[in-house]
Amino acid sequence: MKRKIRHIAAASLAATALVIGTAGCAANGGGGSDSAEELTMWSMWSKGEPNQLIMADAVADFEAETGIKIKVVWKGRSPVGKLLPSLNSSTVPVDIVDSQNAELVNQLGATGNAADLSDIYDVAVPGGSETVGDVLNDGYQADLTTDDKVFMVPYEVYTYSFFYNVAEHPEVASAPPATWDDLEALFAESKKNGEAAPIALEGSIPPFATFWTTALTLNSLGKGSFREAVADTTGKTWLEPGYLEVATKLQSLVDNGYFVDDYLSAKYPAVQQQWAANDADYMYNGTWIPVETAPYAADGFDYGSFAFPVVGDAKPVMQVAFNGLAVLEKSKKQEAAKEFVSFYLQKKYQDRIGSEAKSIPARTDSEANPAMAGAVEVLNSSETVLAGDNVPWDDYMTKVFHPTNMKLFSGQIDAEGFVSELATLSADYWANNDQ
Image (cartoon, rainbow, N blue to C red; front, side, top):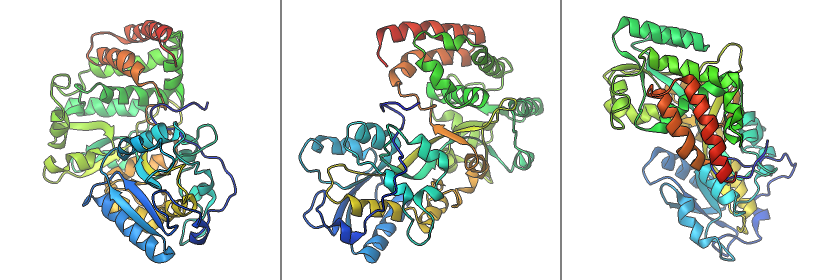
């Protein structure tokens, strides 16, 4: 079901057969300058960051090969927020914006300030015959489709995974858990051995617990199941048996004492530091964790990962978020700007996102950071959905879901209390708020 965009990402991908023009076709104007041979781009990266260095090299190569100049302003995080004040003018000072999907889609796209990039997916990536659509996971295109328009093209992907130290658990690397039953057995064995607590969870940050609930719901009941329950204005969906089964499985983690002792009281980032010091075996978190925890990891820590396992014979669903490029609707140099968007998806730059930025390239044929290999293998062959099951209602999550979910994770309520409370609070919330 398509939706109007408000929060987590959504954009569009219509499969039109237009061919992106070359530099010569871009002579009809430009965003912030009079010359068709110069574009302006605002980037989310700061000078010296690995992603900045990769993009700067791509810009230099693009200029040399096309004759089109790109003035890059390295704005640092949230460039769209810094751009918004200028968007009401007849012209804007920027042609291309580099940022995360939540900004590009929900701020630029939703307000009509981003151009439709549907046609780019049918354009060949320079240096080969494959199109942009060919080199990306098919699911990414569907995830970024809203109202038959696409407002960004991703070059970097984030997902959620279980992380662990391969040096401590080589058996997991050779046979990662594929089902929830396998995972529970892994936790039980870990606790039985008593060498470390099974699970590190930053319980002081409610969304970290929600990562678990969303993932288990999706991998039990399928893509869209979490959003469906949140969107039900009567709240009754939460009372369906499948949601109670999810809550019961989560309750068992609490009842069995699988979380580290101070998971509710420790101040972030104390728990992830404990985990990196081998004081816990597993952490389910975003794929930024290996880079974020590396400075205080134990000697010889060898990062490994595996995807959230399925329940029974359910199909795996991987949550994704993106960094990517958008083109301003008011830019008079859209064709030249689009040319750079496809140019940046060349494999030589994508490979460096894995090896130097230590992240996940958007291209499925580029190798990700080895710490994420286990999860990426599943990612590239599974159904995907925007992080949080594409739920756009932040206020609901903050006021209703996160607090109730933390009651379950802290043992204040049981599974039946969890779904009952969500049903009641959801009905009350939607009775007083618009979707």
